[in-house]
Image 1 (cartoon, rainbow, N blue to C red):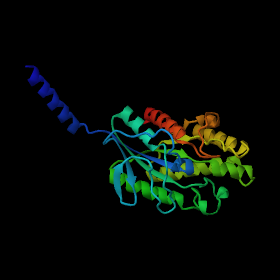
Image 2: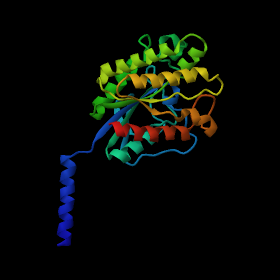
Image 3: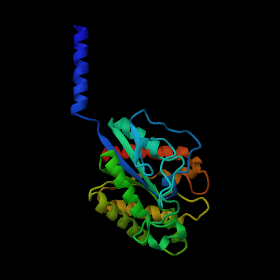
Length: 269
C-alpha cells in the first residue's frame, strides 16, 4: 500500500510538471561599467544546475550563467564579476523558475547626450548603445522563448561628472533617463518594470554630482509608474570598503546588489 501510494504521488508530480511548466523570466542588466561589472575578487556566487542562464550574442545561444558574463559585441563590453549570479540565484530561490539574463553595458556611457565623453558613447538617441542593447535583448527573447520581464539599470557616474563640470543640469539628466525608459518601453512593453540601482559616490570626485544624480533618480521613480529604486545603499560602500578603485564596486558589493534587487523585483513581478 505504501509503495503504491508513493508511486502514485510521483506520477502526479511528473504530470503536474508537464501541465504547469516552470516559470521563466528574462532580465536585462544595462548601464555603464558597474553594470558591466569589474568585480571578481571576493566571494563568488554560483547558481544551481539548470536554473540560471545567460544569452550569448556571439553564438546566439543560451548558456549556463557564470561570471564573467557578457560579450564584447558592437558597442557593448564584456564584464568581470557582476551582479548577475547573485541576482539570478536569489530570484530562482524565490520563484522556483528558470532565470535568464542578458547584459548590455558600456563603460563610461552617458545617459544624456551632453554628458557623452568621446568613444565612451551614450544611451541617448545620438548614440549607438541603446540600439545595440535592444537588438541583443530581442535576440535573447527569441532564443529563451520568453518576453523581457524587467530592466536593472546601473548608470549615472558619467552624467554626475558632467554635472560637476557644468555641462549638464540635474534636470537634464532626469529628462535623459526618462527618455531612455520610454524608448525601452516602446520596444518591450509600456508596463515594463525598470529597477534602478542608485549611483554610488566616486571617491576622487566631489559628491555633488552623484548627489544630484541620486536625487533625480528618486524623482524619476516617483514620477513614472513601475520605475523603482531597487537599491539605494551604494552611498555606504566607501565605509564598507566595497570599492576596487575610485568608482568601481567589488564583488561583495555586486553580490549584495544582486541579491537585494532580486528580492525587490520578485515582489513586483
